[in-house]
Image (spheres, rainbow, N blue to C red):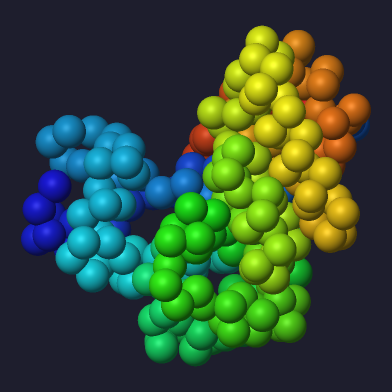
Length: 249
């Protein structure tokens, strides 16, 4: 992907958000969604973020891309709230966003226009934070002080200690660990260690990549409070999510 193509996608509204449901454990009650950006490419169709997020980060377009996602996700959350279906919406951030001096102001302005902080969850990669030589702890603390919850995303077997370093409210255990824990005792031990460390600090734990009933059956006993994955639902456009939710009532 070239920079000029991505600039055009942002400028000409070729991007679209899909939303993956997050449910409570063990009730399966829908509590929120994760906003995941896709690119409706005029020639290639729907393009995965794995193909263009690295280019956005490398070229500095991640600011504009993240601001677009943040605005659109909050506007959609506001629509759901007005319709009586209040859901939290989680938005993924890069560490570059957190170091961006304009990020704080943009977030504050967007919240004023598109809904309060109680609707918003910010997700940041645990590995990216751990590698950052100057971790943006002050901005994480500021977001939490304003009522925005912060998620440590994609936590792996190396990240139990990371929870002690960063001010977060939620930890998401990686798909790789969750998908293996039913058949790999080492993976299960790692998951237990991360969840135990989180709960010991008053941090909620979310299982990512739950794809079968056998995995689901383990979540409550381990200590997860929420989960997402293909067993529950794949990411989908906003209208389809509303229909999916209505069918579950």
